[in-house]
Length: 326
Ligand code: GYE
Image 1: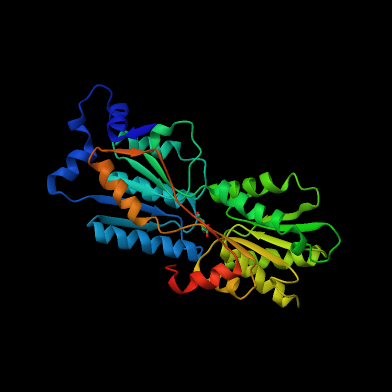
Image 2: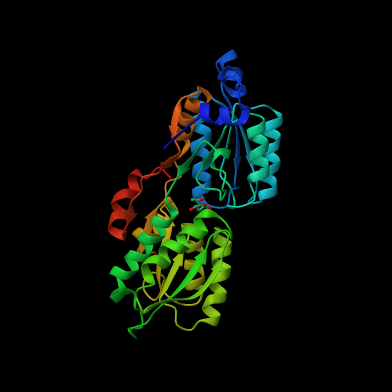
């Protein structure tokens, strides 16, 4: 199924003609496109790389980018989106910090005839006419890849060789698509394995500090931890510090699985302090600008654009590191 700007305009305007669709008309006048982008924050290495990708590709595409950083707060993102609507930008793009609670502001954008493109994270809404497309990863699949590695490497992950693999989970931001889906995907795969259990699970908010603090608490209250599953590299790196501070060897005494594959994560993986990383690419800028141009021009775009990704073992990380872009 395809969604088009024509469909969005038609829904918004009822019987009015396509030429009356605001974003198309405005951009045609001087040929340039203005995009309002509401970013989540600067919580992780992934996010920094994502912001750079968006800013650089806007520049390359000649798109005038209005950028805001919500510091991981939904209310700030909503304020930015409202201000982009007031400024009558041609297209709004954003990475929703959490999945729910967007319908009202997206209705406002729709009424103002400004198309909305979701990037990186999804929203949970019944009304899919509120956005044109969603560009980003399949987070459930990422969680499944993490779980599959653990199932395939159960022998080596059973650190105390007692037959039971105790996993502690560091969740991303509560209510965010990647936290919900990476948890779900991991559980999908390990649930049929009776020896693998998640013994503790808490949010570290996708930050290094958050990962470190939660891991310190886990280490104090859980005497037997075989594996850490962190929803991103930064929290895994924080956990790694906590494990070292507790006098244990990360990657050996406690295995670590993470998601992202940013440079710092890959460096720790190559050094054997992390055991497996599922890649999640932050380089969404070029695709976003391409889609924005098409949407503003009234061309068709697919309603879902999935990012292609791989996984890394320590050996593969060593090979990939010299050319790693983020
Ligand atoms: O994995 C994490 C970041 O939404 C995919 O957000 C993104 C996640 C990424 O903070 O590092």
